[in-house]
Image (cartoon, rainbow, N blue to C red; front, side, top):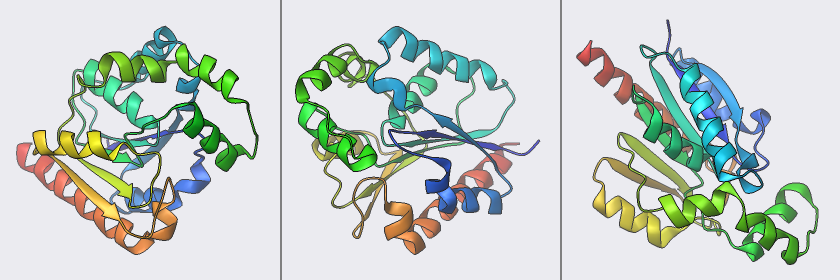
Length: 213
């Protein structure tokens, strides 16, 4: 059975936005499964955790897989890593981890949906959401290894301070910055570099896996 890449899409992410990543996975004989996870902004922490466990239960103990979290999808990536028995071949975080308050949330909604929603309603939504639960209770507890973080240099939704501190304390995570990109447009704006980075990471992890077998 060939390995699987579970791509965890963040807010507004659709499969059509991921053609570059899908091409690289398929090139390496890896099946792609796309899962929407943007509901974290309005789902309760209990439902958020339940969804992560459902994903974990769908992965067999002998499966070989990658986790690829895009934007807010990184939170489900953390939760799955925390709860699953067999660890991923590799973790890829793209355009994350994020930093989001009501103002940035409003900007993000404008960019992705063209809809203006008053901050009052967004503050209420964030207060009860799985996103806020994660930031307040799990932010410093997430531990992933065996991974890379792909971020645009001009991404205003990435928490660069926390990310840099996290990278310094976790030598198994490598950060790659893309100079021409902002939030969730790396695959388009830095396509050639993105393809090379992702392809090299996948090949290296598959080589390591074969050595262990």
